[in-house]
Structures are given as C-alpha cells and as structure tokens.
Image 1 (cartoon, rainbow, N blue to C red):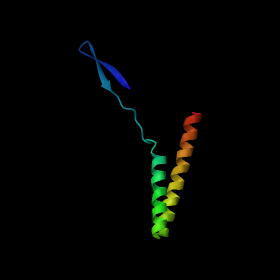
Image 2: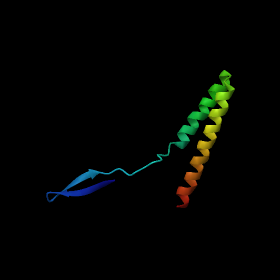
Image 3: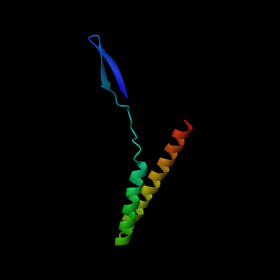
Image 4: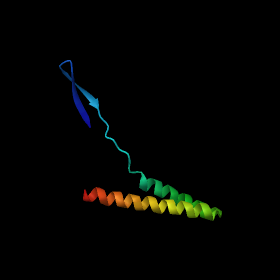
Length: 73
C-alpha cells in the first residue's frame, strides 16, 4: 500500500490508494433495502415494499456475479 519515493536522495513513504470504483457495499445495501421492505410491508406501504425488495434482489444478484468473477479471476 505504501510506495517509496526518493526525494533529495532520501526515501520518503507516500500513501498510495488503489482505484476502486466498486467498494463492495452491494450486500450491505441489499440488507438495508431488505429491512426497508420489511418495515414498509409492516406499515402497509406495499408499493414501497415491493420496490425495495426488487432493488435488494438486484443488488444481491450483482454481488453474487462480482463475487464469482473475483473468485474465478
């Protein structure tokens, strides 16, 4: 994670961050939308509950595809 850069003949540690476009929060978001769907269903908001469940389902599918791809590659 740390690269060494020579400055004036001495080595200085510089923090380098990898580029990450997807941080892996898909499963966390899926759980949040699932909980939102449960609360909305208990309160009688069936439209919000259905939409939240669809979003959670897609996030879980994306998570699974990326997990399998990272294991294979």
